[in-house]
Image 1 (cartoon, helix red, strand yellow):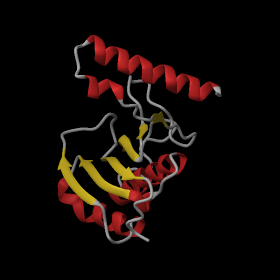
Image 2 (image 1 turned 45 degrees about the horizontal axis):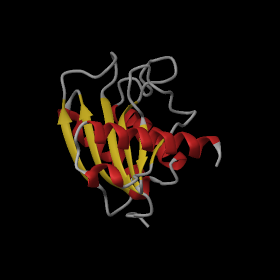
Image 3 (image 1 turned 30 degrees about the vertical axis):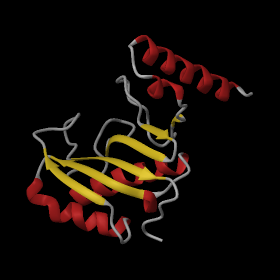
Amino acid sequence: MDAGARIGAIAGAERRGRAQALGAPSHCWSSIVSIRRIVCPEVPESAAPFSQCLVVDQQVFLSGVTAAGSDGQALGGNDMAAQTRACLAKIACLLAAAGSGLCDVVKLTIYTTDISRRAEISAARREVLKEPFPCSTLVEVKALAAPGLMVEIDATAMIGASLGE
């Protein structure tokens, strides 16, 4: 058993032990679910305590991805479509590292600071994503994590779904 498998087995045992200690029914802790944390060099990890991407069995869950560059500045400046494309490029990188791709995305939640510019977001999505398009929700928010950021996208994918192929 390699180091990664040992760590996964230990983490699984810890989860089962916690569930048992909390009085969870046996069916909640007796089955083993595979959970892998995915990292991609092109998508820097946040200092905040959360995972950017997790694979749970065949499902891929991505936290909100922004157009922040390595310097913290918004890629694409004030161009809503460019920021959207930058987010989708980062999502594609994380999905590839997870053994998936944009064609496997089944749900997007898009947060924007200016919903009146939704046509720009939609145009960028059409450039990058293929039909049938994933389910999607667009939400206007007051602000994102850093000044200049106008778009944040979180995604859920199913490895092997191949919606666009």
